[in-house]
Length: 627
Image 1 (cartoon, rainbow, N blue to C red):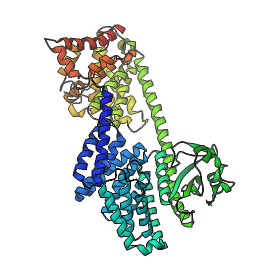
Image 2 (image 1 turned 135 degrees about the vertical axis):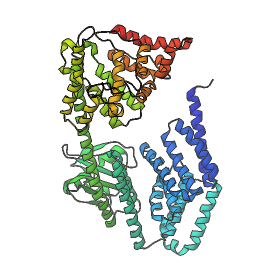
Image 3 (image 1 turned 180 degrees about the vertical axis):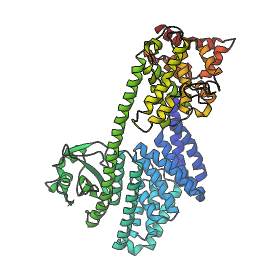
Image 4 (image 1 turned 30 degrees about the vertical axis):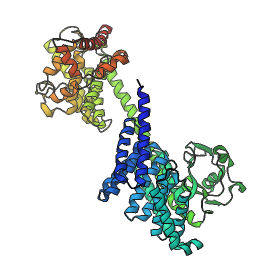
């Protein structure tokens, strides 16, 4: 019998064949069948969690949907945006190139030729594994340049496409490229012999590409909190606009007087650090001057160590300081090896425009990350303070030790089961940790009494809820504390209005308070107390179910009983650091608390059901014995 991983491997191989077939069918303009192949491949890749391959499928699917039905333009772009997010998450340039190819194709079809140039230029450069898409990208680029009357660039794209090996390239695509080449040469024989175009056309295309690059940087700034990805986008756009082989963005570390970068396009991303006294980037940062060099190795300012470290060879370069909004230097651009000659004045103007926007964007990003770090540190201190308060209350009585922590865990499980968002769940969690803080005002003789409480003692212990409310209401550590106070002080309210301390009823009780009530009671009856032993689980379940719409909100009880038995058992045994055995977890994770309750109440228990009862009670009873 084949092993699971062998089946998965075979399945992925089939998906790759389907993907390649889809590309061939796409080039042959058999779009419907190509789409069907992509759908099958997408399902397999998704099941195997291959995000990169899923991104490719989504990109091509969005494109094919548009080709078949152009009125689906906006729907197709939304699909491409989803694919773009996955592609950027993978940090794989080829995956991003497939996505940009799809965008470029649609923009060309919509007669948005400058936008098409922007995306297709990137696509044709990084498409290595998919020659069909690369050839199609070059064909569309040539057509776009023809529309923009740029004969030279159109000719270069056709020439570049003709150099792609024709193995496995569909005949129809080759035929279309030959027809394009023949028609172009016949129509532009004189232009090709001179192979030049006007400076006006050059300037127009440069400006359009620059605007698109700045737009992409601005979009990334708004969407990207990750500094490395922001730097990558800035470097990619700069490299593309200046038609260079590589671009690095160096940031200045004033404290260490060092320049560092994690972006050096064309090689693997790794952090490079060197003294700000070295190299052209260091010179630009120290002097504030822009440097333009035709022969790097014949200039004493060039730091050869980086080339030695990376194995790269620098010929010409353009280096410029990068400034923030206060015009302070925060780093430097270094653009290497222009592909069509040497860097010129126009390149400097473009880099200055990009640098002004990029410098402000990077500093904002750095400030944002510093602020986030400070907020995280404050949150850690705040959480530590809450844990300490809760532990100080629990420590007054060894019998109730860990109660607040377990109520917190039950409350978080219920909140997640109900689909509450992260912020609400966090507030409920903090309220759970602090729900008994008012016991600081209860006499030890009452709190730790062994045996039943008198009426007067019970009334005294009920006061802890009001004390909890008063303490937390006056604790203005942050904006959420007033909400925490309301939730924590309502955990003894009852759904039918017979609870305390305010006698609230139904939805008058805060949602968090209703959740805490379920967690608090369940922990109380499944824990040892001075006046009684831990209750059998069957009886505990009866109390919870009988309390629906009386003591408890019925919907919250339902959510509690929808939880899996393994996570409930985790809480029950948490105090002593015990863990569920993997073989037991596999069984318990497939069973809800409601299903287990039904098993306990059934008269005729199967052998399998008895095994489940034995597993859960082995943890529960062992926990009881430990007490």
